[in-house]
Length: 367
View 1: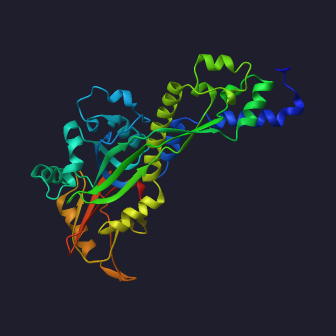
View 2: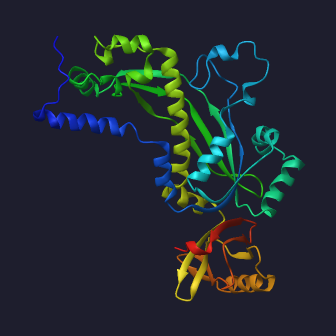
């Protein structure tokens, strides 16, 4: 077999295809987060708690932990995190998902909180925790519930093998083309909870999806040496290399999916539909204003902002509650915000039946 390493001008379309393939596989997490961060944040102040803890029903080798890792362990896998809590909070902050993001700094509470919220009767400590979160100006609780680990499944050679072969035969760099596909069966669960009773408002189940790996990501030095005489897509996988690459890619994708799903238009609409009222911040002729829409009458409201005079806040509340009108069978309230209002502020409303809705906005972000 004769292999040519020279560039031929009549093959430039093929070279362009190969270069495009290489560039598409090199998009960084930072670049993706920058794009997501440019989208408007959700108008909520959120306290993040919980963690990507392993579930108790781990069987065999998983994506984030091998079966051998469990041998001789006495502690429950529930006490270990597949993805660090700091990584979850970091990606939410860099993705500018919410108007305000604060991490729960009590690691022991993070582990037990989910079970306490879902218990038939709520513990007094949890009631105090929710009350404090409300008083601290939060609108919702974001709970990273757990990570269901699952095996890595090989789907074999994918449709990129012709590009791999072409780059290998002409340039000797076919090992850099992702020509094998794998899929992790792990899943990350996240929920948003209201702060009155801890009831779930929305939930997400995130999966990594198919992952394409190049030979450099799925084999060892021996496999790379074999690719000198054998096309890369025929070189066998190295299990440890595959596990490491799929684990890293799965973690990155799960975190990116969390940001992408939370900032999606579908999620924004769903939050508004499932809360007691929908609050929006709009730019009007007479200045910025708050609009509240609800299926039932709003009985109480509150405007909270650091440095805002109580009388000014109360005046806004009275104007808001007295503005009631009915449009398409729904109650509508609106009032212009005080001119002295600056920076971030929270609006909270309560309905006659006890429903509560809360949102956080910034004065320079009216839409």
